[in-house]
Length: 51
Image 1 (tube, rainbow, N blue to C red):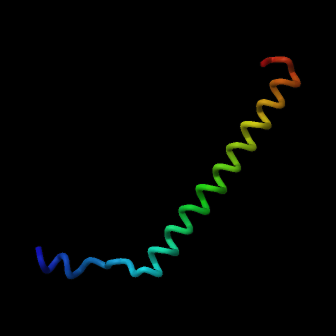
Image 2 (image 1 turned 180 degrees about the horizontal axis):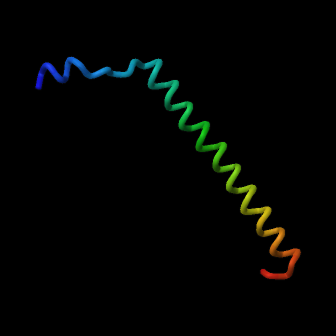
């Protein structure tokens, strides 16, 4: 087990910060995308008188 633990690649603080930023950026981008898509669909339905 100790040999396997030595083979594990542990993230550095710099790598961890970069990866966390990427996750947060994609979360924000996808949130804006889905919000926009939802607003567009709601607008289309309202224009058609279906909502």
